[in-house]
Length: 189
Length: 189
Image (cartoon, rainbow over all chains, first blue to last red; front, side, top):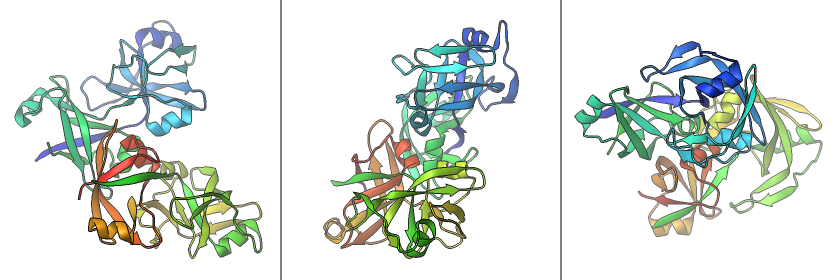
């Protein structure tokens, strides 16, 4: 049985070096609050406020390290609250997505694009993928059992030597499945 | 193909006659704002505030007519915001569920139980059920296609001469499936 631990992603943001400087100051470095399941990734102690046309969230967790492009990942529920209509996208694919206002302790910036609803996906270490015959970018059917059983289809496989086995879903998806971080999902095909 | 229209249920409340009187006044009758898909059911013009241990919603829509028991139906997302942990239940099955405070224009009451996350279900008119060979209380697998395809399992069939064909899911489930009211779902088995 191809069993995968679930990691539920609450709303969060990845920032570029340039945006970190604008929001937090010159030569500012994010501090590590907690290591995440993917090697080298961490939740930072810092948060930013994000302000949309209809609403705002005052404390959105920053995930580090810095990336080449700033990207805010929210649930569809969050999107309604902010007044945005972002598409479901894979991480990094932000062309044509909505922008938003970001507010940090020393500055405020408007990003022209970068707000997405993250496409559900599974990180595989290359060894796991080879063992199970799964290719990078393959679309999978994945079952979650429990109080609200369902099968997510079109779950994107992402394979790398830098990944640890983990299925990432957002809070809407976790709530619809009655799942929480640490529960297991089963790859059906 | 067994195709069923989807109706997305936002948070709402059903009130008993007694609770309507306590919240809105002696011999108060709910006014119809909009007829719903199920015959005789309506969204009322009236709303109540609901107050949980951690948060509140100021305007929760009342659905009429009055029922024998008061029941607040919320999403898992709403439950976190209120600070409650209600179970997933079928409508009417409120034994042992959390209570909450309700505030209307003339009174405030605390209900000892009645907060649920509604179990996803499909209303079938008896004719539809017979045509498709579906029995009352049968558990179904139902597919929703689109941007976030998934299969909901364990969807409860509810069959009655008083029902119109409609699949009811909550906002978390709709967001996880990328679905909205009026989209179609397909019964697989």
